Length: 344
Image 1 (cartoon, rainbow, N blue to C red):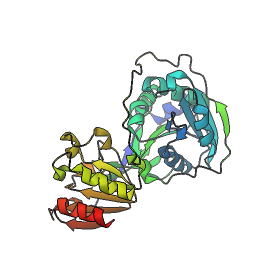
Image 2: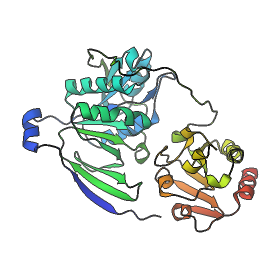
Image 3: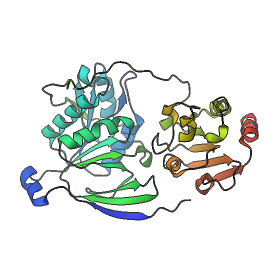
Image 4: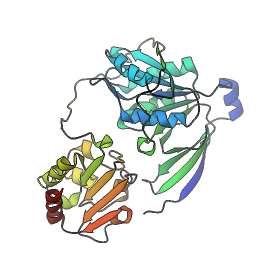
């Protein structure tokens, strides 16, 4: 396994703490979780359940903000059933339907100003990377991203340098804004809670008018979603062509898993961008991660190193992927993968 140095970092605010306290005053600790969900399916995302688990470790009352268009109440009812959630706030408006960052950030800011929360948490995702910086700027607070552990109310652990270093960060900001790497936290149970549901604070102009939703093109697949699959089979440059990824798809279908790819394979147009695993792609932590023809660049490892079991197939016995693999097979993947598929 790779050895990661530990760093301790003090994140200093941009002004004196005394000035901060006089400006904002003292506040009771409380946490706001901004939910991610599939509005079309009416379901709360697994990443939100992981974020609620992280919020629970702060030992504050947890409020969940669910923002969306018509039908969002079904998602809110699911959030209300999660143990540990004390309140669910529902922001229903057409402006929030597609999660446009300029609109959603206004809803989060209005909710915070009404509730005076000490912590705001969101799953670390492409979606939150769009709106969380806007929220932080509007609230004049420095966010801490990709949190993988919570030490106390003001101390958090996060990876740096593509996972080569783990930093322990202490902040004196009065408002802590965090994004949570959800693979580091277990999903909260989806039933057993009975939180109250209320209407979220109103925004004077929910439609910011800075951008508009035009259309979306969604890939359809019978396989499980990459970030939540129990089994992920990823291919790299070693597969050489797009057609050779069909070998991995056949194996994935037998294992009821998802197919991923390294950045090298995506850059060569062998697989679409949404299936990229790594620092600039998706972070996964399945029960089984099978890396086929992947050398193991640090940028890729940062996206899958938390997998429960890692298996690597590569003809180069010196490939870095073997340093993090639980099981390694030095072999020609064009022979090994079909043979493995036949025996599954």
